[in-house]
Image (tube, rainbow, N blue to C red; front, top):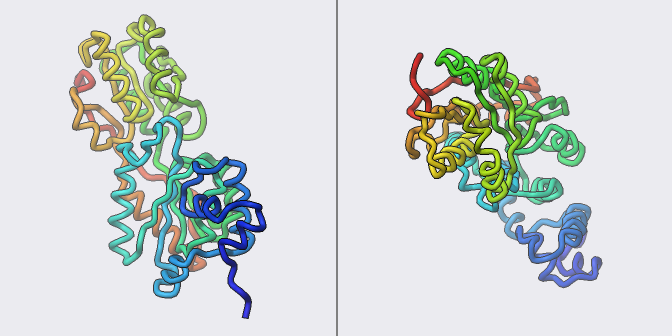
Length: 333
């Protein structure tokens, strides 16, 4: 019988303390350097180490867990699970996994290697990945053999991967068209990047609004963003309508403008994207592009089940969006 790998054996091989290896194993890589954490994760994967708790769970419940991995992007400032969109997505995924008799295990990561380690240590039905870019998925496909569904992935063609997207371009188009029909002549789109889904939202917005639509790249860090807005305020006030590519940035902008004496929507109409619960909790309530998180959760888990069963799955599933008009924009249509 093959002797089981012990944590102390791996620690000895790497010249580390058992505690240091344990920190990485239990999701506390901040207790060691990132270089050390990568070495430990690689060794755990190569040696096929499973923590005792995982062995017990696998024996009793083989392949009944769906892993949900979220990119702890710097814009969330270590509060990613408190973000309204992420919380809504998790709520829908939790309800759908429970309905199917599955368990949901959630991890937030900053490094792709953490996903590989997570997928290796647990016997998962599949993964749902949120907040990563297309290049990340192709790299992961080479390292992770279980099926996974991804939210907001452009250009995904890897085997056993299904991108569950929304119609970002049409969502942006609806906002641009609405602003144009309301009589706005200059409108601004705000985003922290110009690639993937945000690029599609901007393209759609520009198509819907026409001449007079402009794009502004904003900092991810909240403090830097506030300083940026203060510097750009005269130019921002020259626009009568602003579309932020997420509710997160739209609410942040509304609060900044209000603190600067700008009336919303009297002077500037503001719209966001995602239609999270946050939209109805701010004043004025936020106009936003709605995506159905329940429909998205069902599509993601259906895709994982089909891939696992060897059935054909469309590599890209695109779900519809709709504009929900509230008080942050002048209702003129």
